[in-house]
Image 1 (cartoon, helix red, strand yellow):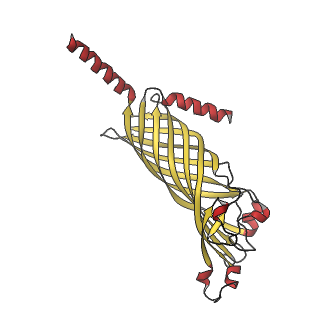
Image 2 (cartoon, one colour):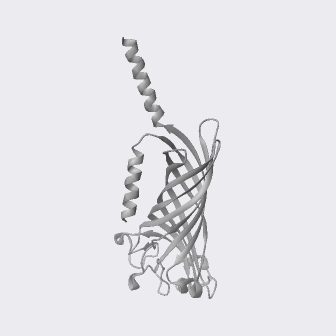
Image 3 (cartoon, rainbow, N blue to C red):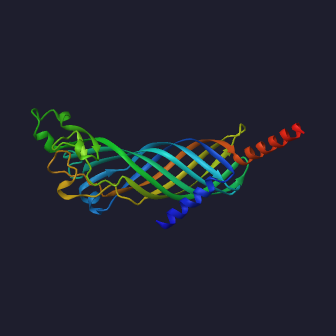
Amino acid sequence: MKSVLLFCCVLGIVATSYGQYWFGPKVGVSYIDHVYQDKTYERDSFNVATDINMQYGFALMYTATDRYSVYGEINYERVGKRVKDIQTDGEDVNASMINHFISAPVMLRITLGRVPFHYYVNGGPRLAYWLGGKGTIFLEEFVENLPDPDNIEEAIKPYKITFNSDKALEGNRSTALVRDPNRLQFGLTVGSGMYFDLANGTRLQIDARYTWVHSNMGTNSGSRDTNFGGENYRENFEYYHNIGTVSIAYLFGYNSELKRKGKSTSKESNKKKKK
C-alpha cells in the first residue's frame, strides 16, 4: 500500500509540472480468463468459458522526456461469464452474466525509436470499480415448477445484480443480491506497443497488455450465497480475472511549456510596444 501511495504522489507532482501532454479516445478488445480459488470448481463441477469483450475509454499521457512518460486511462469494461454444469453440458445449469466496470490503469512508460515510429514498454497498478451486471440463468429445477414442462424457454430467467438488500426481495429471481461484493478491485498491468506521429500533429497508438487482477469478485457466505431463487445452485464469486487486451487510441497533443513560452514572448512584445 505504501508503494502505491508513493507512486500516486510521484504522479501528482508530474501532473503539475510543465511538459508535453497527449490525450484522446481509445477502444479495445479483451480476452478474459476467470480464475477460481477452488480449483475443483472448474475441474469437477462446471465449465466456465473464457470471454471476449469490448472496452472503451479515454487515454492521457504526460511526456517528461523523449524516453520516459506516465500513461493512464479511464475505461468502461464489459466482462462476461458463461457457466455450464459438466455432467449434463448445461442441461441442469446454464448461466450467463455480464458485469460492468470502470477501470483506471496508471503506468510508467519507456519509449524507444525515432520519429515517426515509436516503440514502448509500460507497466503499473490498475484499479477497477464494479458497477453492476445482469444475466440469464436456466436451472433444471425451474422446469419442474412450470405449468407446461415442455416450454423450456419459460425456465430461462433474466436477472439484474444488486448490492442493495432493500432492492432484493426474498425468492425474487429477477434480482440477484450479492451480499459480500468486492467492488473495488486491484491489479497489475504490463504491456508494450507502438505509436505513429501523424502529419497533422496527432498520434495513432496500438497497444497490447496483460492484467493480473488480484481481487476476487466477492466471498461466498454459506446460506447467504446468491441462489437466483433456486435450491440446488449457488453462484461462486470467489474468482478473479486475468485479462489480455489489444487496443487502438487516437491522441491529440498539448505542450504546456511552449504555451508558457508563448505567453512570456507576448508579454515582452507588449512591454516594448508601450515603450
